[in-house]
Image 1 (cartoon, rainbow, N blue to C red):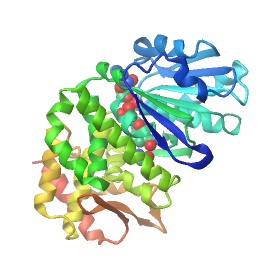
Image 2: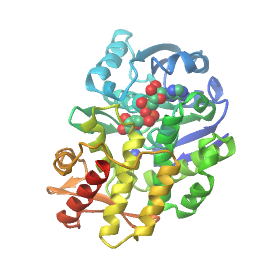
Image 3: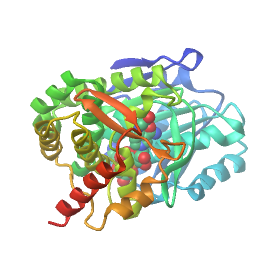
Length: 363
Ligand code: NAD
Ligand code: GLY
């Protein structure tokens, strides 16, 4: 087992990474608040990992909420189901919520924990690659609005993150690639050594080589923990973790949540951000091709849906959380390994970038 810490003063917490971590009472015990535990999971993950997970919490008064599976259920309505169970079972302020699943379950459960009785402890047990390398770490929680991704939420840090890497054995290849998109993101925004490693080891990752996967998860968590520790509530640096997300969130919302996986939309969005960075003279065309090749190697999409023209992108991007004083700030690449958040680009360049992608998607 490898352990990283997210250093946030009194709210610091460990990220445990390794195989065989589910079902170990000793690992979770230091992070459980009182005597009541509520495990939140979904209809896909429950048959796979609920029994093992429950074993770790056998010493507590434990109940389970099993939600429907899918990004389309990351809503306020689904949140109500968690609150109903908490109230019905008389959960008290020192209870602990446990998120067992991918990023959707993690974001929903974390937000429920942020709101219930104005904040109760929660534990993240991420079971997708994307959740193990990104969403379970850092305390961003929330739900989607029908027209705007992740628009309603709160910062609420977990008490610990338990990434049981053997749960990835049951993940399908498409979900694996979606997780790799967020891994590539760390290479692009701040870790060129890792980017080079990813170019050399992508086949191993796709083949689920355990050494390569463990290294990629650990390196990603290390990067994420550093960024979160430096800027917990996204006053600056943390926004760079959103490379490609402004374009990607537009794709997810416009396509109907769930049609495109989050990681897939981020992959296409990262290429669009790289393209705009090249139009600003920051990246070379060769570097944009290099990024595209890596995304393609990872079996990720690099073209937005054919119907997504400039007005469609702008309709959804105009709801982005990075808008400030009416200006759309984008995460762009000054160079490989260095991201900036800027509104300092000509609108015509953004239009040209989207128009060209739209044409390529329809070619
Ligand atoms: P997901 O939660 O929908 O999980 C993907 C699919 O895999 C689901 O069908 C799920 O039931 C299934 N699954 C989960 N674990 C499995 C396993 N071990 N074996 C087989 N199937 C399994 O999607 P995701 O990619 O994990 O997360 C995407 C979500 O995370 C998006 O809503 C995104 O906005 C959010 N996100 C949040 C943050 C953050 O900082 N909070 C960061 C990145 C992404
Ligand atoms: N995934 C973006 C963030 O955690 O800030």
